[in-house]
Amino acid sequence: MQQQMAGHHADPVVGYSLHNRRYLNVTNRCTLRCAFCPKFNKTWEVQGYPLRLYQEPTVEQMLDAVGDPKAYEAVVFCGLGEPTLRLDAVLTVARQLKARGAPAIRINTDGLASLVHGRDVTPEMAGCIDALSVSLNAQDAFTYERHCRPKLPGAYPALLDFVRNARVHVPEVTVTAVDGLPGVDISACEALARELGVGFRRRVLDQVG
Image (cartoon, rainbow, N blue to C red):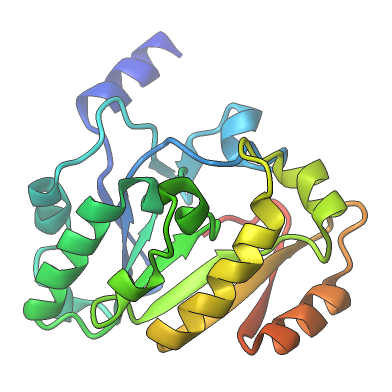
């Protein structure tokens, strides 16, 4: 284990490819402490990629990790953490990738960026973010708190507000929920997505990436 850790330390994965998309590992920090997150089960790997970071990548390192964005159908800000905790860096990289001809740029997010930053950040995404995949994860605040264990109060209503606002500035907004968590009603989550006017995607427990 010691050796394995040392190996990861020497070579952190900033960019990784899945399904013809290039994923960027932005941060291991998060606004949530989801009970089902691989991190809390002592796993820092996604599809065989070690995603533990000992130092967060710079804008330059993220750009280098993508190379030519036109080689992929999309670039996705993701990793085992919340990318929007580094919002300025993410948007800087996104703008530069768009300038280099990136076909699509997506952020996988918990939807708490506006709550964390203390302002509606969705207008800042206009023109450089093409899609958002937002972890809704529950049909009500009680179930959300149980599974996602947010660090900030008022997280669930803030998430719903973020989705409503994001629709105006980001062409494609999808909310997701994990099927298989106790008390999570997937059809109720889907109905809520329709009410919010956004897409819905069902995720499967223990299938990351």
